[in-house]
Figure 1 (cartoon, one colour):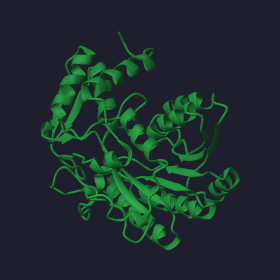
Figure 2 (spheres, helix red, strand yellow; figure 1 turned 180 degrees about the vertical axis):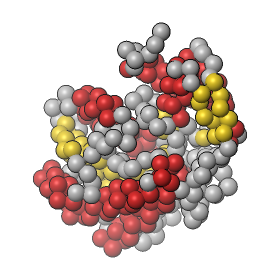
Figure 3 (cartoon, one colour; figure 1 turned 60 degrees about the vertical axis):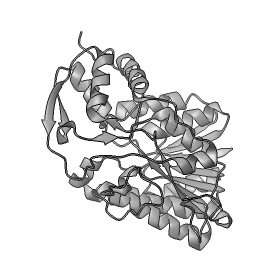
Length: 338
């Protein structure tokens, strides 16, 4: 099958592209390769993907509608998986305009082109951050999402609304993917596990916000990919409205929202303890107040995803951290001081 993936050199996009290529699919990657974090890491991911005969690639911004349009219209994908976005909650407070351009304008361009090529299914990355100040746990897809706490979260919620309207008017089958704190090998350097690992190895302080009094639904990358891959052939059909209890399927459009998480809460301090154990070294802990735009807790309910695909996350956080540390020490071995 011909699958178009935006953000193919990003963390999730790389893993998904590789998994689909290994399964025999033709994948066309599209990525800006921007310098939000170490460009060398993005290039290293790309170097692995380009070895596959069925992988093609274009480097450009989603906002460049002409290049994006020419690429998609020429490739004529059956499936589009839109993962590219400007990530980072804290960075969105400093550079909000970047998020509006990339996350909203870029997503609009993708949806418009998905309509033109009449894709069988468009899957779009959203985020657990859309739940914002919601205190009802675990988060269900049908819960209200009206209190986003960061610009990043607000742009993600906006794309959900835009996608639903397109799905309603033009009947584009769309699934929104609300990811919960993804981690694992080849991860993003701006995220906690990466920063903590580097800090501990370099004997530098690691910043622990809200004095560590928070928990996350840390979800290992392989489980995230299982969730996405299982949904590719599960395009929403509004005729099936009310088939499942607590279904997020729209009553007027082929549109659905789905959580992809691990369904287990992991306290941040337990996460750090496990990392220290794997590294064989204690962290220099710098306890900080809560950051603007951040949330104290996340926890997913993936009952709907399980009903649709049989989704069953298998990786506990200790094994996930072990796998990450093994990759990190191998990838950065020349840079680590002994």
